[in-house]
Image (cartoon, rainbow, N blue to C red; front, top):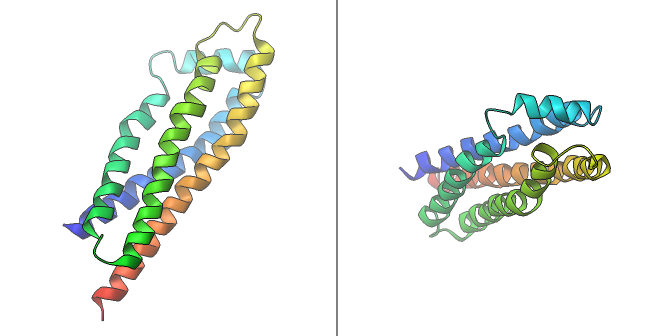
Length: 158
């Protein structure tokens, strides 16, 4: 059961990290390529679903799985370090998403475009740059979890 929780944590963390890579490489380039027309197109595309929904659905279970992994492997100090740091990186992603990205998403996708083009351009630049930071946090969390998994197999094989 412990191993299954750890593997699910790695799967969820990997999925979140890859979505942020996709957001940066594909979505952001499209959204911000020709403001205001590109923002209007993105808004039309997202008219029936909010892109933040993915992070609200997948982020909390990822954090929960990471916390469970930390708890389940708490007895070994080296594993505790790997899984504890991984948990902190995942928690940082949620904090960053809620405090930094959600306000910019509101500017980009809900506020009036007319009269706010510079504000939208600024939010777009900020969003694109910081999404790389969010991606690096996710990749660090996954790598630490994988290192913890490797260390666990080293302990089990002794």
